[in-house]
Image 1: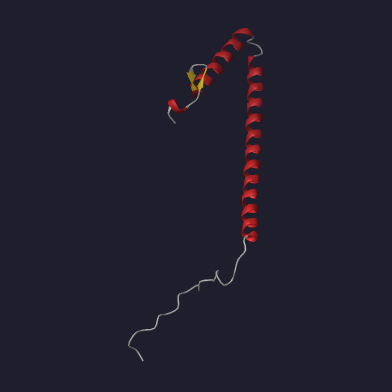
Image 2 (image 1 turned 180 degrees about the vertical axis):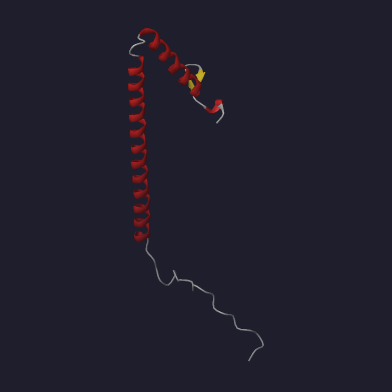
Length: 104
């Protein structure tokens, strides 16, 4: 993915901006409270892990719901469409052999 495709955030682009800000915040945190820095980092990791896990679960449920809606709609449309047997003839599975010309 090119950096031009990433969204602008505060005049800067994309993931580099997010990661550099996170690094700056962690450096400030370590400078302010060096004895609690490891606890805070672990708490942040736990929150990020919980967020990603919840996002994955929600995405999976959304996909499952969309699949069910798609197939339910396809079933309803197929059953609701009238089929006239005279115009809707089934083609044979295998073509019939054509008669050979000139053979008796």
